[in-house]
Image (tube, rainbow, N blue to C red; front, side):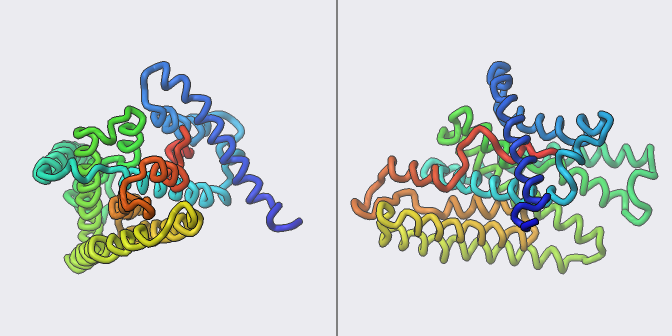
Length: 314
């Protein structure tokens, strides 16, 4: 049997079709209940996973999603999230954020501080009642901070989907919320890195290394990648070199997402940052804004269907 027609590709494609169809099936119900479509997609992930489908006889999750195809589905999910958050960063109105830096930082810090304190205190109380919950070599404070930090991280992709579905992503509230979520993503993953470093006995060395790498990445994107993208956009006629531009930007997008993943931060942050660095005016012929061309090219770069990787089974 040819490798391309082997059981693994067939099972992966079939599983992807099942996920898509289930996500589409729940979309009308979500709209009727006046809920974002992504809520139904998350529900599909829970229904198709061990939490619901796994409780039925026959081990149905393993039959639908064998172990050998789950890594492939994970890669597909990551690619979908990367493209979507790239589009969210590209559509972010940076002009509306001028003079609102303090508000963005305040919203981001307060949205993380309250759940962090509440969850950390709850985790500390739970392990005091049930000492066997954390591992014997994990300090109670480390366990509480890890749980609190992990649960205080904003679901960046979910927030972006909700704002887009309600057409709030370009509003002042939506812009501030998106920017605050991006800042909070950096703070949260730095917090996770800090807790893991202390739990693993690495001390401050790992924390300093991650902070330096993240700062270097931000400087490279701001002072190298963004000017290069602007120069390419000014020199390249997208009407004639559409495929070339799409390939170049997609390659840069994957490199940016891979860089943040390598640093230890989620790849979605790198995709969002690359989208923010993209020039907003892409019509080189007129050197001015071309909304029709820009929006059409954005559709080619990002998935705009009602499905997102959130409906992958958990």
